Image (cartoon, rainbow, N blue to C red; front, top):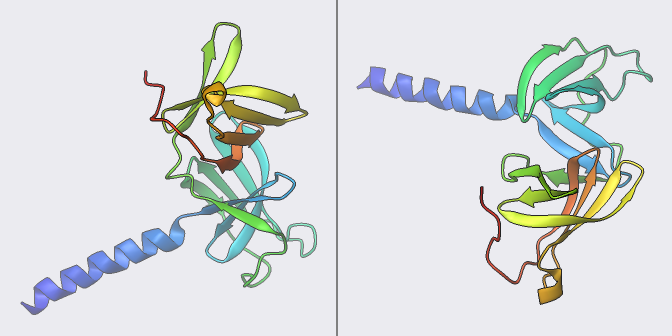
Length: 169
């Protein structure tokens, strides 16, 4: 029986380690993507296909060369030797985005690009630089849901749908 308890403790340790290792993604008020991992803050440096390279937020101030590479919400590579301790508080005003709960992708309908978020269809209302505002296609029926994207990443969402999901593959 003591052996069974030890196995359960190891499983719990493994789950806790996985949760600590999972990056959390944020967006600043100006639309910059930011990630927190193990108490350290990273800014998005570059995107190549589905891989995102993140640099330590202190790379300029403290000459920190720590790098993390992610695909979606998964960490796939890191050079994590920081020149400073982890920060307790962020330097920017951030909004948490839980990327595991949002399912979204882009589709072409005719000549226009649309956005599908959790099976709701959005059409682009306007575009300014790399920022786009999307409105639910049921807006004429009173739906007030909107989405803002920056470089095709959702930075804010206002889910005020007055109808059931309206899109499926």
